[in-house]
Length: 447
Image (tube, rainbow, N blue to C red; front, side, top):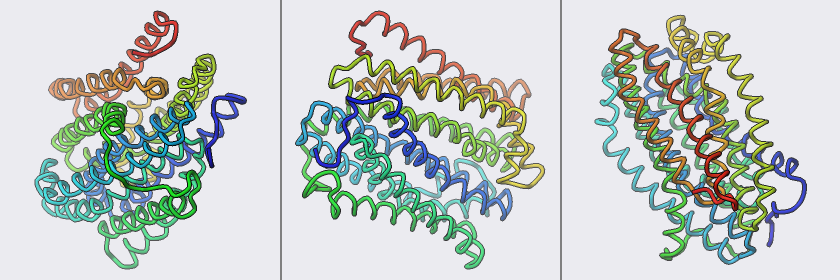
């Protein structure tokens, strides 16, 4: 197949690194979009960063919805490649892009029209809420670019060409980094400037994906970006991607509730601490997600080719690598939480509140990385339901736990301990589930 790498043969560790490093770097680049905004907006004060942070939770929900077609592409296109069915791979790629366009327009319209009641959910001061509404309305119009870029990323990952999304997203990040200070401070657009910088960067990223797939035709000749829906292809994509998207969207809903609770307990500093610490914690999350995504693409091809031994060797190598990185991040968060947070928000009250969140959450990093790594195996074999069950149930446990701990008089620390303990629980449960099924099922079909 033109431009597609075969992952069913060759050295496993070398292939995993070659696939994982660009994916991981791409994840860091996507995280850096938010951190760049936070770093610049943080210079405007904690109230400005609270406004951007409240929209950040909705942006997280958006990228969670986009996972339907990102994971859908990685699994369906990857398995088609593993079975050497080029026509099916092309059709699945087109279907994922078309579906992402439809979903994104619906979602962006909802956020734009109902931006005021959505932001009012956080019960922020009126001037902070006003800035947040403006920010949301601007970035929501760029969400179709985000969705289709995510689907295109999944297509390239499944094809073993993860360096291309890395390069494209890197160019987008540089664009955002240049435009942020220009729009925020030189043009004096403040938080609106950060929104417009992100908008332009996301549009540019999508245009580069169009160039690679449609103009340069790097994977297939005469590739169709959009087409009519075919029932069997659409059902397969939704069956694969919906559980993943659902668990992440529901996770975002839970964090919106926790954000409101943090705002009620600690004012705008509470919301700011939660959203910004979450962005910083994404360092470990994106590292493990990068390896997990690479593992998923690797497993998809090898599972379809019935090379189970390669699947298990790849899993062991991935767990080893992520645990080393997780240990380092745990040490940094627990012992240097204040100092790390102060890089983004230099106000003393702000970095003390955020530093406490990082220190408590630091204890759960290894378990979180274990959970995400094992998700990659489940996704690669097309069994996305078990991770969804674990994630949804444990994430929704956070609501009563947070209310209980706050009622004990623990304040914001009660919310941070809720997040920490449930993350530990998710890692333990998915490990037990995986080991039980692996032992019972000789062919390793995870169900």
